[in-house]
Length: 256
Image 1 (tube, one colour):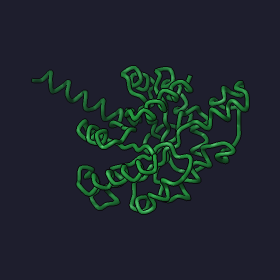
Image 2 (tube, helix red, strand yellow):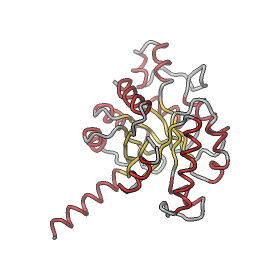
Image 3 (tube, one colour):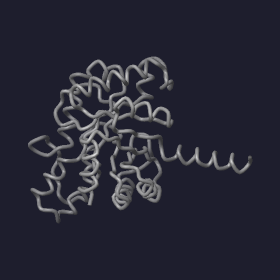
């Protein structure tokens, strides 16, 4: 079933359409299902800043697929173990934080892909291979279609951007505006012109290389800005923040 969700997602990107999804820190699969039923395209299950274990993430992946939502796992780091475990659980892709060089980007691709594109550790007795019931060659071919999404979010990454963009096997380049703002000397000020200009520059350079870009936005205005700038992979806010804001607005409406 995830193959169809992934095909639909990739088709949207190839047509030039934008795709939308929140970061998710909740451990309740119901929130993931609600996200899919609401019409989002993907969810980023956050193992870097969220509390989920691999066991809990597996259940969230199941919930996402049930709701026709592409599950992307943001790994807690760029290690081979973190990447391969997320994919073994059946994630439709991995989003890997703090990539600062072409060598690091190459290492991510190698960890996420089987031969001949990479060197991912081989085990078919995992959820992604239907616990070995998927024929070997079919599984390897399908597994190599999972999305590889490095995050560039610091000065070193910006300095090595052209080299990172030249790495074969990257599907989307994700820009982390908050970490980027810190590296540019304006921590948290993601609307600062220096941050906005840096994101625009990254996007234009990626376009020239034929690489789709993504970004995080926590306001409707920011999401619209980046969509209009040609960014296709739009992560809108975080599940817990969306819920908190909705609660505040409901209470404000009732009181008034």
